[in-house]
Length: 247
Image (cartoon, rainbow, N blue to C red; front, top):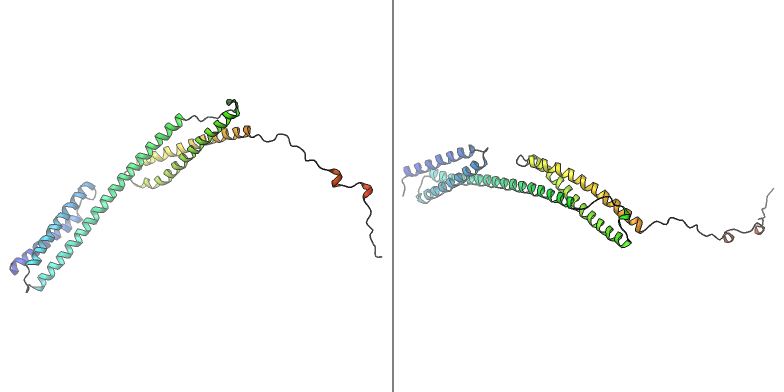
């Protein structure tokens, strides 16, 4: 069992260690993420060791130990828990920030790859202003109309998706780690959306031409037959209506 003097020295030693730990926490290299993580991890390890030392002191306290010493040991334990919680919370936030950073980078990289994929799709998909005379039969016209409609639907889905990506990535411009790539991405998105809209107009024009040819509007308007005799009566059948004049 430790003497009162030895207990006091042990308590004072842990207090000095905690003061040093707080100073270390306040002076961690916040401008370097990797060094900051290492510093917090070392700090958490040291605090765990201080807690074990303090626990050993608490167990060795005699029943008649000085009240000030007992109070100091309890306060040290609480202080260790507080510092450890701060360090663990800080470490968790940094790790979450790094994870979010990597997610943003991966998303931007994925969107850029998607743009390249859509550009390849456009380069291999024939979208041009057609003439109805390109189709020799009605069956060919219907098949061509179905094909143009399918491409148009696919194109509209791609355009809507790119518009959603454009809206989502607006907030990415505030993060320095992806600012440059996000700017490039959004510029390419804007250009590609405009191209898709232009292609959509061509497809809509083709579909309209084919539809008009397959279902032509009646060119001649047949006048409605009206039975004149049923609508009017001969003049001779009109009898005057007597009118009474009060003079």
